[in-house]
Structures are given as C-alpha cells and as structure tokens.
Length: 159
Image (cartoon, rainbow, N blue to C red; front, side, top):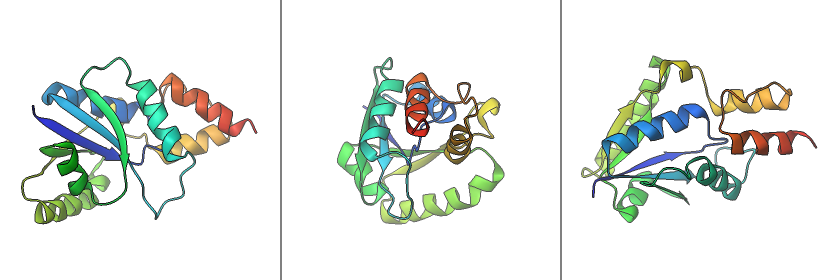
C-alpha cells in the first residue's frame, strides 16, 4: 500500500486543503492527514478541534485517516508507513520555503519523497489566516471552508 502524509497546521482546514487531499487520494492508496503541532504558532483552534474538523470534513472518503503529531514530519511519515509527504503549492511565493523543507527532509530521510500538488486555481488565493480574519470580521466564508469548519468558526467568533 502506497501511503502519503499530508501535514499541516489546518487552522482551520479550507476547501483548498480539501482539494489537495482529493488529488492526493487519486494518486496514492492512502493519505494520512496530520495536524502538526507548531510551537511557533498560536492557533485559533486546539489540536483536538482541528482533528475533529478534518475528520468531519473528510468522513466520506475511505482511504484517508486523520491524526496529529509533534516533532519531525519525516519521523511521523516513518511511524505511519508513508512513502512520501504531500505539500501544496498555491503560488511561486510558496515554492522557496517548500523547496528548502523538501531538501532538508530528503537529507533527514532519503526514503521519503516530497510530492508537490497544486490546488484548483479557484483556491490559489486561500489560506487559513485569511479565513480566520474574514470570519472574525463576520464575513461569509461559506464558499471557502467545509460546513463543519463554518460551524466552528461561527461558534468561535460569536462570543
């Protein structure tokens, strides 16, 4: 079974992320979507909330699992039996950072391949920070996030 890991903060998951996940599941037998715990970020949602939103948003897909991890992505890839790491590229501005990370991951674990996927062009401008800002300002983000995420954003910002 050829399994890949799709790590991210997913704070929150967007339709752009979902699009990448759909593309990855067409190329591989299994996709492990994993919420990365990044001590350098202050997320809006807890790890548990992000895992829950992902599970709810992906419940109709049979070859996807959702988990979380703290540490090196390549180590987690080994733990789950993944042969690769999926990374999404929206624009040229994403490439430099992702390229450096892919090369470092290759140095750390030569048996893990990074695969870059581009989302549908209608999602290239989306990112979680924009969604959080729009939702906080009570803007309609229903076109940009799955229903489970929309519900959680409304709950979070109705207080």
